Amino acid sequence: MATYTADAVALLVYLVDALPEEADRVFAEAEAGETVIQTPPTALAEVLFSVSRDKEVRSIELSGTPEDARQALVGDGPVAVAADGDETLIEYAHVVDEFSIHDGLLVASHLAHDTTAVITADGIIRDSGIETRWD
Image (cartoon, rainbow, N blue to C red; front, side):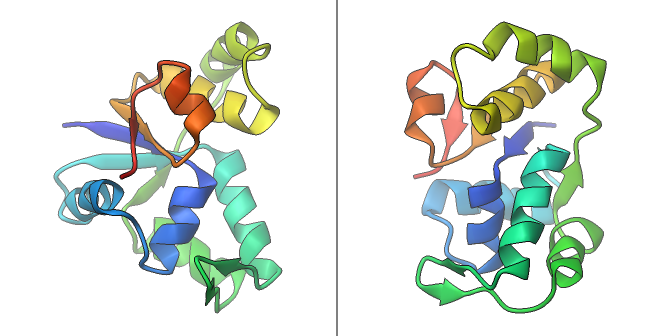
């Protein structure tokens, strides 16, 4: 079964139901139990922070509480929180010079868990040679 790593932007855009076609397909497969989507704890924390500040995503205002968002993504939704630990930090040590801390932790989680691709709109990650899903 394919496993993907999702960044905070992908999770936020999922919450407002505005994913582009390719990313939407992966999330639909995860909702059907055909694939797995995981996210690092730091990415989920970014989502909860954004929801707490009523940030707009794709001109759509986020509604609900951070707990509502967590429940929609992880409790009842298609996302699992990656068990990031020593393996992720080992990978992070190898990529720390290539990425921002945000992107580096995401890529490190992807590498540590050997996921199929990263669900992200981030061109820096895509341009680095990491397999991505978005458009």
